[in-house]
Amino acid sequence: MAKIIVNATHKGGEGKTTNSIMLAEYAALVKRLKTLIIDMDPQGNFSGRYIRMDYDPAYKGGKIPALHPDYEPDVDINWDGRSSIANIFYGEEVIPYPTSISNLELLPAHSIKLQEAEAVTKNDVIEKVHLQLKRFLELPDVQNNYDIIIIDTPPSKGPLTIAAIKAASHVVIPAQMEQFSIEGIYGMLQLWKQESYYRSKDNPIDLIGILPNQVRDIKLHKQFLNGLCKMKGVADYVMPHVIKKRAIYTEILVEEASPKSIFELPESNVARKEYEGACRYIMERVLDHG
Amino acid sequence: MAKKKVFQISDALTEGLEETITAAHNYTGELRVDVIPIKRIEVDPENPRDLALKMDDLYHGIDESDPLYERKSDELRNLQTLANSIRDQGIINPIVVYKFGEKYRLVAGERRTLASLLAGRSEIQAKILDSKPNELKISLLQWIENVERTDLSLWERLRNLEKIVQTHAVKKGMLSEQVTVTELSNLIGCTKPHAMNYKAVLLADHELKELIRDNKIRNLEKAALISGIQSASVKAHVIDACLAGAVLKKLKVIATQDVQKSKPVHVKKQLLLQRGRQATAVNLGVTKNLKVAKTIIDSLIKQSELSYFSEHVSEIDWDSYKSVTETFKRLLQKLEELHA
Image (cartoon, rainbow over all chains, first blue to last red; front, side, top):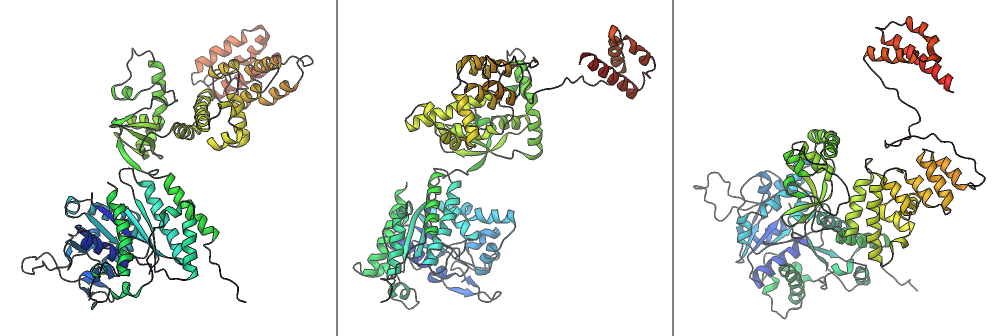
C-alpha cells in the first residue's frame, strides 16, 4: 500500500502547505520516490507551486488548474482539459499533472468545486464526501503508480479535512508554539483520536507528531515547547525536530526563486539541514511501518 | 522592576491534550463497526450465557429427538419478538465480536444473532475487535450487555460476576475475596450498596449458593441479607421464611430478632415456580365459555356451606357474561367471608 501522509491542522498559517511542499520535494528529489501530491485546500497554494493556476472566470477569486499538458481539444471532446482532485466528488475522471520535478505528480485544487464539497451539509452526502478520497486512493491505478502520497488540507475541520484524515496512514500536525496554535493542536488531536477509534490494527492511522514550526528565540516559544514536551503521553508526539522562523522558507516560494527547492541548496546549508532533518524523521517513520 | 514573564500552557489545555492522547491509545479500533455474514459467527465457548439453542438449530430446525427439544423450542419462541423487531428495524446496538481465524467469535449479542437468523437475515452489524479481549474485558462486556436483561437469573449474573472478580483479582495479584466493594462497584459500574450486596452473595456458603442455583432464592437483596447472617440457627430461620415468600422487610426483622424469643413466623407457604414479583393473590382466570362458568358455579353451590346460594343461581341469565360474572364474584365474596 502506498503510504499517505496528511498535513493537517484547522488553524491557518501553521505551515501546512510549506510542510507539504518540503515533504513532497524531499520524497521526490532526495528519496526519489514516486510521489503524488494532492491539494485539498480551495485556496490552491500548494497546486500553484507546481502548475499554473488560472483565475476562475465563473467565480471571482477562485482558482482552477491550467489546461492539462496532455489535453488535445480535437481529440478530448468530452473533457474541458482541466482536472482536479475535486473531480472525485463529482464522479469525474481525475488526471494527475506532471511537475517540473520528475517523480512528482499533482492532483490540484479547484476552488469552487472543493468549496462546494466542503459546504455539503446533508448527512448522506457528507458521508460520501468523507469516504470519497479514501476510496479513490485505494484504486489499483493509484496504488500501483505511487510510493507515497502527500495531502495538503484546508484550514478547517470540515468534510475535506475529514476526508483526508480518513484516507491517511500518517498524520503530521505542524504548529507554532503559541496559544491559539496549541489550542489548534487540541482540536486536531480530537479528529485523529476519533478516526483511530474506527481503525483496525492492519490499517492504523499513525500520528507522526506535532512539528514545532516558525519557532523563534523567544521565551514564549521555548516555554510552550517545553510545556508540550513535559505532558504525559503528548511528549511522545512532539517531533524531535524544530523548524525555526527563517526568511528562506518563504523566499523559496516566490516564482523568481533560485534554486526552487530547499533541497537544491548545498547540503551544508543550515535551513536545508534543518528541514531535511524533519523530513527524514517523518519519512523514516512512514516507510518503516511495513 | 518589570515582572519576570513566565509562559505556561494552561492546565485545562494540558489536561485536554493528555486525555486525548490517552483515549486514542486505549480505544483504537473501538468503534469499528462493520456488517458481517452471520454464517461466519461462532459462539465463544467461554461465554457464561446458557442458551441451549444453537445456530445450527436455526439453520436446520430443532431436531425432535434432541433431548433439549422442549427447552430449545421455548427459547426459540422467546426470540420471536426480538426477531420481529429486527425484521422491522434491524438491530439497534451492534453485536461485539473478535476475529478468530476465518471466523468471528461472539463477545456479546448471542440472542441478537440468533434472532437475526430467525428474522431471515444473513448479515449483522458487528463491532469488530482485533483480537480476543482480555478475560476481564470480555466478562465486563458480557456483564454490561447482560445487566439490563431481565431474563437472566441471579445465578447467571453471579456466575458472570464471579469470573469478573476472579480475573480482576488475578490481575492485581490478590485473592477473589480481597476485591473490595469499591473496586467491584467501579468494575461493573453500579452503586456501592448494590456492589455490597453482590459481594455478600459472592461470599455465600454452599447451602445458600445451591438455593440460588436452583432458583429458589432469586432476589439479590434477600440473598445478601442471608449471606451476612452469622448465627446458623438464625440463618436457617430466615431461609425458611424466605422460601415461604416473606418480603425483605420481614426477613430483616427476623434476622435481627433473637431466635429464642421470636415468635414463630407465619407466612403462607407458596410454590415459587414463577419469576417476577411475589404473587399475593390467586388469579382465577377468565373464560369465554359460559358452560365452563356454569360447571364451576354448579359445583360450588353443591358445597353444603353455600347451598343457600342456589336461589340466587336460579335467577342467573346463563347467556349473559355480565350476569354470570356478577354471581361468581358474589360467590367468591361469600367464600372469603366464610374462610376469613
